[in-house]
Length: 441
Image 1 (cartoon, rainbow, N blue to C red):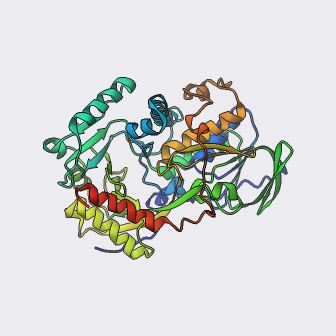
Image 2 (image 1 turned 180 degrees about the vertical axis):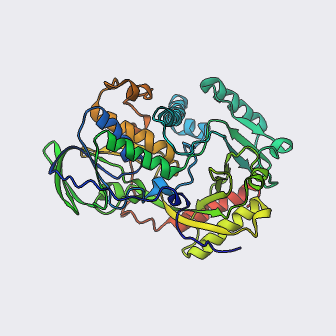
């Protein structure tokens, strides 16, 4: 196994972080947004197209954060399955959460198609490799219910058919979802930036928010480039929330996710391992996600960070890749990077409001779908009108402006300030649960 020749993010080779050239500065704004990622840009596009004046503040370069560091899989997961949701919230509420997840994913696809977004979108489905024992009848019944409700047919792929989906003997079976695909996340981010600028949004990169003060019905915002007063404020910082937002920071648990990308393997070799060019996940508490790169030439694999040293962490990912595909044990790793994902304490996405600030946040590692959806929902809360005066904008809001995640409380722990000191213990606990469940660990 070899260390990566390049430490940088693979996606940045074609779509690197950018500095905003917008030199305009105004001390007044109708709506201010902190964070120029998927959520912030989705909110900004929706608001600007509805005729509102919008200013975005981005602490780093545009494209520095999680929106361009992820694996580019449009999973839109909720951390709990339907049975677990029903146990916690009741059957009707469980269905409403899943309804919204399906709508959120479909909305992203409609947005990409309608706006002619060039982000290498490929709808090849996702296979979750199953290592744990499972009840076939229960899975098939759930698949039938899902297909009946959403006209989307998941499939249980058993051992004898599995080789037509993955060239690996690592799993007992797989669960295939045809409605999950892949994108180039950095291209999507910069395409959304293009749309925001075209709609009249002002974006200030390398502009850190230092302090927020409530003033009447609005907000005084101190930034590294000056002060501004805004009538409305959306915070879309998610996994990169800093000490300037203490209320939010102590309600989120940042987790480091890291990714490797192989050298060029050749499209035929990659296809032999991934015949349908699908996205992949695992049925573990601490599993890997992986996929072919959009050009079909390489394989990308990611997972949660388990070691402080980059070399050791990278080696673990490579070992995980070789555990799935032994043919790749001697392959070179050309890219390795890490970034923050974030979890609320109940591991459910959030659209929270506190002291007048709207927070689309807590995407639990599935921000490609949830950030787009909840950013738009945050905008619609300000517009307070489900029928936007723009047919294109209204068309992909089947539940506008309401969201089930707007009703979720955001809890914290006593004395917690945003640094997850308990994370090593939590990861050890989840890994133990994986081992006790049986299968390939």
